[in-house]
Length: 198
Ligand code: GLN
Image (cartoon, rainbow, N blue to C red):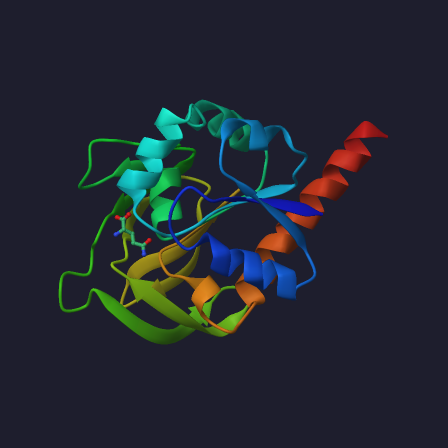
């Protein structure tokens, strides 16, 4: 199994370290030709969605990423990464990859609550630490989107087919269970593809 980590801006190194700890091979996607390398899943890290979106356009990577994901490539977007995947951003006109049927609000927690930490229940996992940094939350989910976690009635984690979106930063906590959950989906997708070929 091999995971491509979008490494244009933001907290990509932290994801690399977690995968390394879990014994999973990964590589950085920095330019269009990196997307030709074989991979079984993609991580889009937190950072600044406007910057990541701009670079994806400038480097001509947006459409290729979009079609890979639409063709079933599992993807895991954290914070800005989730904003990049959303098909509607309440307080921004620009949609980026837009493969996830969710409406998000950027910088949704206001100034005082710009960053905070909590421990909350996540579906399929149990209680888990959640670190929010100038985080978005999810205002609305479309049909077929599964809500995995909410904090104070605001949705903060979702799954849509093989796409995961999280408003917080699991890569900043010493708890690998969310990454393992994503990797389980990647494994299942690999098995599905193999049985389709046979
Ligand atoms: N505020 C950032 C944005 O709008 C997201 C912050 C983060 O990824 N920690 O893109």
